[in-house]
Image 1 (cartoon, one colour):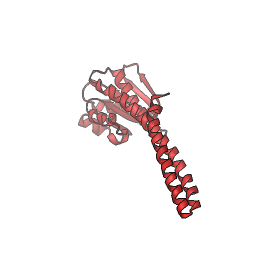
Image 2 (cartoon, rainbow, N blue to C red):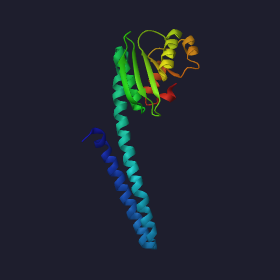
Image 3 (cartoon, helix red, strand yellow):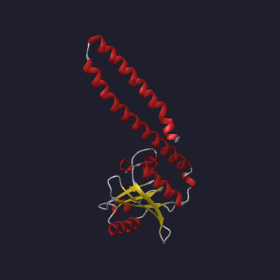
Length: 195
């Protein structure tokens, strides 16, 4: 049995027990006051709620597992080589619902990620690791890549962006994720709320 399902079972059992107790209470109320319709409608209302609650609990378990894996990677954040930094970014994207996340190394030793946003947009992610603050030139190069590829972008670094780099990003469909934003993102804040 998968770990996320095993951790969700006790909660689901507790929800089922609470629902049964609620039905018993409503049934006694029905017998006492002769409300036959109340019992039928209460059962019809509680069953979909139980299904939704069990679905929510299983999703929470899955998100908790991803959060734990992300936290383990962040504990080693300071010692990550570039490809593993990109894998961490890919894991965060998957957690936020991005699909078809693909990590690739280009010929000039850059690492980028190609993905689809939850809304279906094509997303390019450029990962810059351990090379100092991001310059205006790096953002301008990435902006050209985005225009050629018809995509929106994320530029992720564990460092920071220079003031000129931030100015170069104005009007470009790119989110700038610096070290502080990366920490917020890794702490379960969705990407679009970190920048």
